[in-house]
Length: 159
Image (cartoon, rainbow, N blue to C red):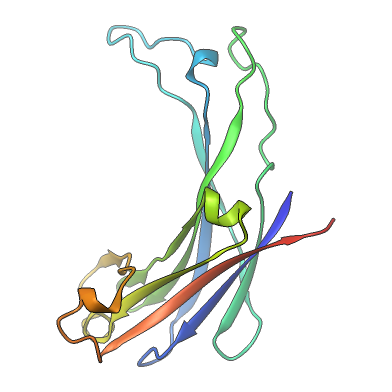
């Protein structure tokens, strides 16, 4: 199942040096995983794969993901492990800041948009290393007039 993640930047105070991304997967049925020694806990396997975003317009970038990229299989001899997408992120780098909005499973499958707002002040203070995940609402900022947004939208692509 192939999807395109479309990232659109609106109102950013400047450019980004690079745009990268990743998609996270995890096993959703813990019964296929043996208990860990000593603690007896079940630790479901998970992995992260890169997403390549390419420029598709002045402020638009597109990346392709496969929600079924990791195939279900019996890794431990106690049952088939079923993998699912957790979410995908687009990482917009400026200085030492990674502006990192994410779109999660239900919004990917539902082909919905997710908007995250970021402070221009965060962009201006790029000399301090950090990850900024933004906020779902402009009203979360004391200076709501000095924000920019990054929208992630999922669209299913026929094979």
